[in-house]
Amino acid sequence: MRRSLPLFLFAVSCAFSQISAPPAGLIEVTPDAVIAFINGRKFTVGDFERLLPALNPNLQKLVASQPKAGLQEYALVDLLTREAEKLKLDQDPKLLEKLAEARRQMLAVALIQKQTELTKVPEEDVRKYYEANLESMREAQVRIVFVSRAQVTQSLGAGGSTTQAEASAQKEKAGLVAKLAREGKDFAELAKQYSDDRDSAANGGVLPVKIRPGVANMPKEMTEPVLTAAKGDIIGPLEHETGWYVMRVETVGVPELEAARPDIEKQLKDARLRSWYEQLRAKASVQMENDAFWQTFVATNKKDDGSKGAAR
Image (cartoon, rainbow, N blue to C red; front, top):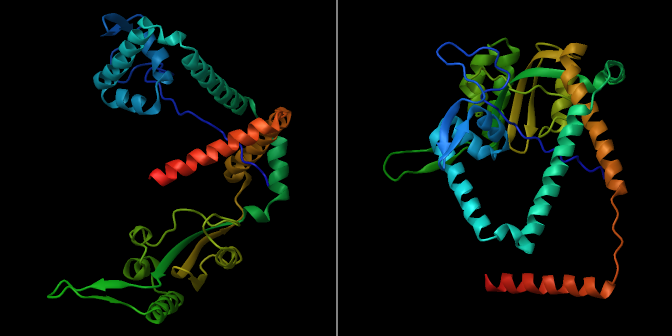
């Protein structure tokens, strides 16, 4: 079974990076400009530029929306850290090992991130992939009317009774939608009137994602009829465990190379990164010794887990 590559990517947004000129209404600042005092110490623009990417994502968001509140949280942790150092907690052997493990993890993530940046896909490879996989890149944009297998209605009168429509009635409803669509009725209006998928119905039934071979959460028996149809064809009703789909094909075909390029480059880049990662994995080795120790260790942990489970 193919292992997936754990790509750990950090989305970091620095308020001062890549700005050639400040927007209207903002002042220009230099790296040594003081913008705050944190625990009595000067805090400059340069300090902020270095600090922001290192903060955890939640604190980054807080600083972005409420700078003082975010920096207050940073100041508190900074103060706690200094108090811990006074007590020489940074020299505790157990803590030192945890810090070393955190360093290993961060360097591993940094290496994967760096390798991701360095991995490039040659233009020739993109073109070869495109030409060799035309049919697998076939895609369609559709409008849908989804009719749920069971429709629940509720009376708000005395007694608050509820009724549930039979599946057969819902199937007939889907058949009616398909009939009206084939007769030329406006499909967007049919979606707004009949579809139980209110999100797409509000947009005239437009499915927000394109249908492709092997698309997630869509069975083959639904994708194939669409991808082999022509523009304007009405497909369905197609039965699914949740209900029935009626679809109108808006566009269908193989995208031009430039349109397909981002997906192709991502697939090829992921493949290269996966290969690099698996090569490193193959070099990682462990040779177990002292079977009696490990058997006792595993047995003890199983016993501990059972005790905790019983306590709950």
